[in-house]
Amino acid sequence: VEQFAFNSMAGFLSVMRGNAVRIWNSNNTDFVAMSHDGTDFNFAFTNTLDANFTGLTRFKIGAASLYISEKAAAGDDFGGLGQLWVKNTNPTQLWFTDDLGNDTQIV
Image (cartoon, rainbow, N blue to C red; front, side, top):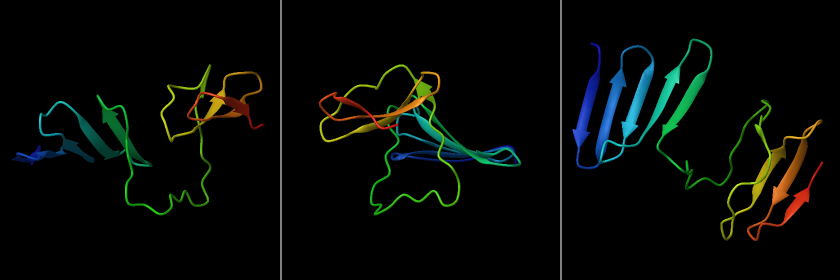
């Protein structure tokens, strides 16, 4: 089977050939894909601003390290949300930005 698909008013689910699954929104314009490349699981988001995890009491990474890509400045500020980001200096620096846009260097 090349592809299995399920379509409903709530969205669209497709199981692609190989090791990929896509879940589409109800307009079929936005999806999240999960695949396996033989070594790692990969998640890809298309046309999505946020990936939200709700109902969690904790988010555990286990023994793995968390890697954060560096950038020049924090993103847009949103009420009630803070940002943890890595500044693209040499060496890189860890920063926190509060919901009012105040930047604080952590390391």
